[in-house]
Image (cartoon, rainbow, N blue to C red; front, side, top):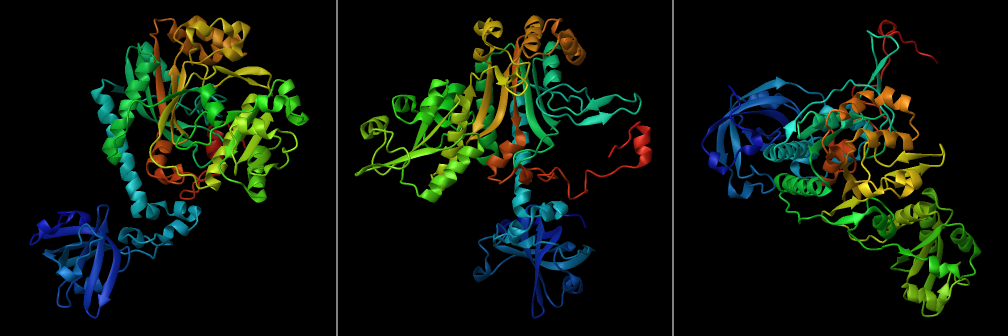
Length: 584
């Protein structure tokens, strides 16, 4: 009595065959003696019919929802009037000859069956904590299982493509040393060396670079990474990335290969053909046009400079910003907005660092609003405003003004229900290598300290670090960063110089990165790579609301696991073995 078919794989051509099925009761109906059971497995449903005089009847009569069954029977065609066109197996049914209850089941805390019948899924309305507590039941729902299968198809497509391109898959360690990579490390105490700690890797960055020194030449890994950082819908403390590195390449090589890989993944996993090549947008242009370094370019509403519009105006609040080296940027709303809508947009701007959001409306009768008395109508029209529009403005430092107005742009698109559909990939390139940390009053890296500057910009590391461009690039999909990488520093003197510019003393650099600096002494080739945020990539591909919906066993936004109730206390004996003590 071994399973011969999956329930959802049976079709009209199986008519007359004897089959053995195993699965869960999705629904049971008793029609006055005749029992119908929709039996479910990962491939779908099939209707099982149990006649009153069948040897299977007693067990079928005892079966309930989510019981685990084994059914043996004959496939027959359904009468024409009973065909269920919503089921792939809807032209046939299985007449049970024997039925065995392999296990009983309690009533689940939320419904599972509706998702398999193509009906509205009531589990979508229950709390996420409940779904995560019973994740093994949540994963029985069709939508969740479909996402697991999509994850499998994507990873298989990645393996197939990169194998064909000459890449070698290499696993890198989970237990390594703590090195600064932009987030807090998860630390693991050493039992054998009290007072010393391993760290879980935030990424395989240094190991993959050392693999290039080793001559591996083309490396990839579906890598598990760990970052102890504040959580959001698109973050988890442990997550998965596609990690790759290549030797003797420049940016163009990495962009071209990744474009072909993305296109292959979309074709194999979704049956979607993507146009190549992807557009490339310099960082400065992305910020100026969209107010974001990961812009959603599926719609317009582009930002525009407004310095000249206010330079000679009487609006002293903006003039003073310009005189102190700041900027004014504007955005035209293609509709007259209500006071309530304007207040909501101003709150968005303030939440993202702006001091406020100034506005003016233009119409057949002239200008209206707070800025009306400071601006000339002709100048505003010359700037691009037309009747019926509202012009929105932010004045501040360059990055603050653009980032705040970029968020207003997104909020405005939501407010106006602007159409956003399709798959819009692009590369954002030529990032600044460094950014100024005003809190610590030092330069810090925008990507990581192993990113190479453009060769012609290296002299600026001493004279004007803020103008140094990085050979870095981000892959953006529909306004979300799904990948990022760079050409790496492969010469030891330049790597030491980078540490120096970042304010890392030579002794500290040697203590934390000595093993890596040592590797660079032994003929490191020019190399570069990229990492995809695989969970975020899959969430976008499957239209999931959160990466938690594409991870089999995720944590909540507070970092807890309701299924296992982790993190959890450990015993005094375990702490003693590690020479640790909890300090309240």
